[in-house]
Image (cartoon, rainbow, N blue to C red; front, side, top):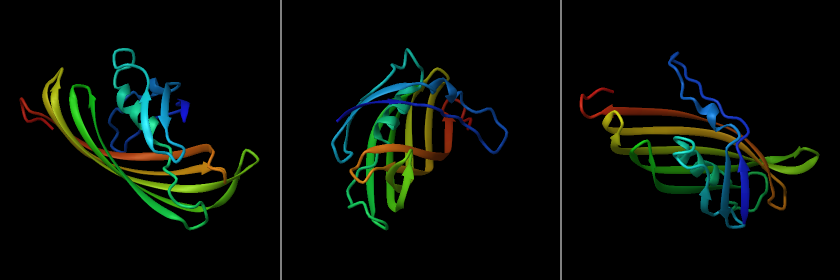
Length: 178
């Protein structure tokens, strides 16, 4: 299946009063993705790093956010998927592992269409290193995601509402600054 995805709205916040990354530049970003009918990710393409800095991780994430429908969609059905991958961002080569747990919470209606509400809980670990404009750097971190995905009984995607909390540690090797 080929699809075009447009990121409607994204924002970033934190609880310590520090400036957040300027993720609003990704609003309206378009990604073309290919996947199997059951949600197995094949590929995604979007803006180049030169056209939109730091867009490669967003392109990959958008291409992979559809659920892999492994279970029969009925209330209480559960399944787990684990994905691993490597990516480059800002001069860092990063390895990621995400465990996604899905639960069919029940049926609902979205835009006058009968649908299933699937709860997705993600846990991601990542680490990497590389040369950045600020010098050699290492990175490690975790994220926790929670979302509601809505699909029709026939498996057609209707929408998603999700959030993600991340904890990252960056170390500039030249001076040991964290």
